[in-house]
Amino acid sequence: MKYTFPESFIWGTATAAHQVEGNNNNCDVWAEEYSEGSPYKDRSGDAVDHYNRFKDDIKLMADIGFKSYRFSVEWARIEPEPGVYSKAQLNHYREVIQTCIDNGIKPVVTMFHFTSPQWLMRYGGWRNPETADRFAKYCEVVIREIGHDLDYVLTMNEANLPVMLKELFVNLEFVAPVGIDAKSWTAPGWRESAASKCGTTIDNYFTFHMASDDSSIQVVKDAHRKARTAIKKCNPTIKVGLSLALPEIQTIDGGEKNAEQAWHDYFTQFRSLFEDDDFLGVQNYTREVYGSSGALPVEEGREVTAMGYEYYPEALAGVIRRINGEISIPILVTEHGIATDDDSRREEFILRGLKGLYDCIAEGIDVRGYMYWSTFDNFEWSFGYDMRFGVIAVNLETQERTIKTSAKLLGEISQSNTLPQ
Ligand code: GCO
Image (cartoon, rainbow, N blue to C red):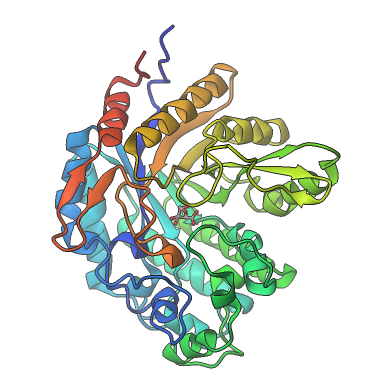
């Protein structure tokens, strides 16, 4: 049996500006990293210096065999002050896009990957309805200036993540994954310090990650819709969507109600947001199993990833089938990945995930591509640099890149469009 994917299938890897570029010091997450009492384990600092090394990096991706690259453009760089758009930064991202094209790599661009300009906090951040208009304007400028050669654009990454993080902000009992101290998140002080670094006070400070109540979710929804309209106005042929973080939801022992609630929170409540989009970006890492008391801990004896997630690559196909059962929309896998220092576990994770994806396509589901998270070992937000998701390792002292075996595997699959026997 030969597992060959459709000819037009998009193969590649993904990053986000803040996690790889380095010195993204005009954004809110930077202020959080450098705040007093910060819950972030590391500071992003130079990250993997992708801002300066993107040409070599993209060439390396092409050499490995990848055919696409999902990355984000950084709002805090492009609009350093409200209404001021930096030609130099637009030029930078124009070059990134051009470098992809010159190397035969299809650029897939995310307009917003969690980080907001610090100045946005002075206006109340993602609680202020005007943020939707500011965001749409920024998207319009970017697409008008540099978006003519793009096929796929995501307005925002994981519009539903704030809902998943809600507990981290409100519940001291939050069961934190390995390496995260929930108490440090809920400790007082650091947010005040971050707000002050953003030039405002705690009353105004409202980052994207905090947008989990109905009215701020509405701001997020408006931001996406207005951005989509603005983008289409500048480039009517571009395919516009957003991504959602979606674990597969499974049920045992009377957990149906809890499982349904989780799916509603993660997916159904956002449906009206993306149902008219050109595609949905699916980002999957594991499953969540619900019983009558709620989400269950990973069963004893089961393998877990460095993040503490259950090792369960089949969740990708599971969640795609569920989505397909509820809505007819083309799907792009914009993230699927694992943090591990044992690259052979990553190879197996990719292969099992892709086998499931192949079956989904064989069943007639419209899946357009697969982008592994992540290209590089990079800055994993509050987990810092210890969580290594990449298919390319980076020595943070020397910035030397080392291709892992998993990169070669994905590169070969990408070139042959076929899974190895
Ligand atoms: C997210 C993001 C990425 C993460 C990745 C691994 O899901 O939070 O899109 O920025 O790094 O998912 O956790």
